[in-house]
Image 1 (tube, rainbow, N blue to C red):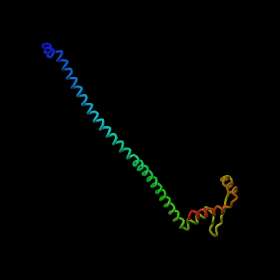
Image 2: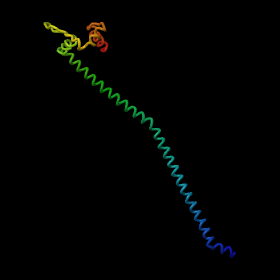
Image 3: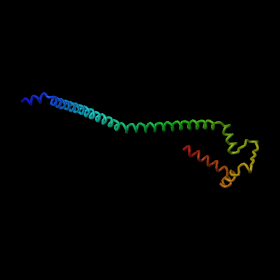
Length: 158
C-alpha cells in the first residue's frame, strides 16, 4: 500500500497523469475544431450549391437577354437606314416634280434639245475608246437602254 501511495504522489506519476489529461484536452479540442470545421464545410458546400443553382438557372435567360438586345440594336440600325433611304427617295420625288430638273435630266442623259436649238455631239477618239466598244459590242441602240430603265422602274413600283 505504501508503494501505491508513493506511486500516486511521485513526480513521474504526476507527470504521466498530467500528460494524459493534457492529451485528452487536446484530443477533445481537436474534435471540437473538426466538428466546427465540418459544420462550416457543410454550410459552405450548401452555399456553393445554391450559388451554382442560381447561376445555372439564370444563365439561359441572361444569354437570351443579351442575344435579344443585340437583335434589337440591329433592327434599330436597319430602321434608321430605311428611314434615311425613305428621306432620300422623298427628296428625289420632290426634285422629279420640278419641270426644270426633268428638262436638265433629259438634256444630260437623253441629249434632248429645246425647239430652235441645234445639238452637236462631239466624239473624242482618245477619251473613251472602251465606252464606244461597249456600245458597239452590245449592238443595242441607246433608246433600248432607256426603255429597259423604264421597265425596271415600273417593276420596282409594283
